[in-house]
Every structure is written in structure tokens, then in C-alpha cells.
Image (cartoon, rainbow, N blue to C red; front, side, top):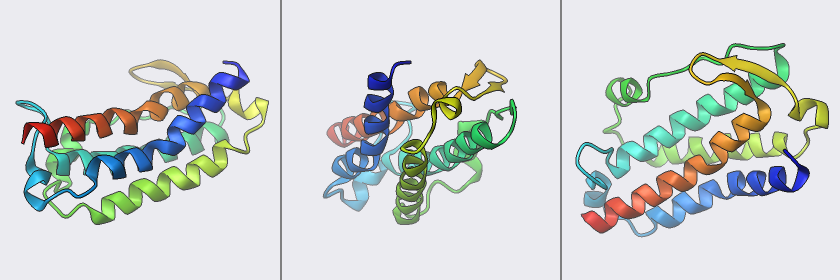
Length: 155
């Protein structure tokens, strides 16, 4: 991956909390239960998922940077939603999402070429490096911000 692509992805990653905040702007309590489609997560569940995914992602990046060829654990997002009480208020999850993004963005801005080249292994994706991590997480918040907007429009 070249420097320009990497920078664009870091910028996209950094913009994630703003995009989610914009999608949630002025949301009413009742809208938190809106779903973009049948069988999809509600806005409330999406916010909790973003926090859990971001905290998991932050740890994954740190493992890639600190451990030699780490195994990056997969996790069951649906099971997280079922077992971690995704019916609770969203404020703490929004704070966790923003904080994990911010601390991780500060790390990304300081990586050397050798650090960008670090690799591990993911049981579902196979080889999983820092650049792959960035590609996955850069778009994650944007995809869910779009999902939130769709849910609010459907409600």
C-alpha cells in the first residue's frame, strides 16, 4: 500500500466518530429502536456494536504492533449483541467508541514503515497485517453511520 492510500484510510478512520455523531444528531429515544431492515440491528444495537468492535479493533492493532506474528482472535458479533445487554443506554458506548478511535489514531499517525509491515494471522481471514487492519476499520464506522441513517429514514 502506498503512502497516499494509507493516509486516505487514516483520515477515513479518524473521521468515523464525526460521521456517527452526524448520523445520530437530534435522534429521539424512539428512533434508537429503528431498524434499517428486517432482521437488522437497531440504531441502539449498532452503537453498542461500534463500541465493542472498536475496542476489539484497538486491541488487535496493539497485538499486531507488539507481538511477533500474533493470532488475531475472531469474535461472534451476534453473540456480543445477545449477551452484552445491547438494550442499555448508548452514551457510554459512544464515549468508548470515540476514545478507542482517538487513542488508536494517535498510534497510526506515528507508525514507521517497519510497523506498517507487521503481520499476524486471523482464523477467518488468514494473513492479517496492520495495513489490512486499517482497510477493515477505516470504513467500519462509515458503513454503520450509513446504516443508522437508513434506519432513521425507515422509522
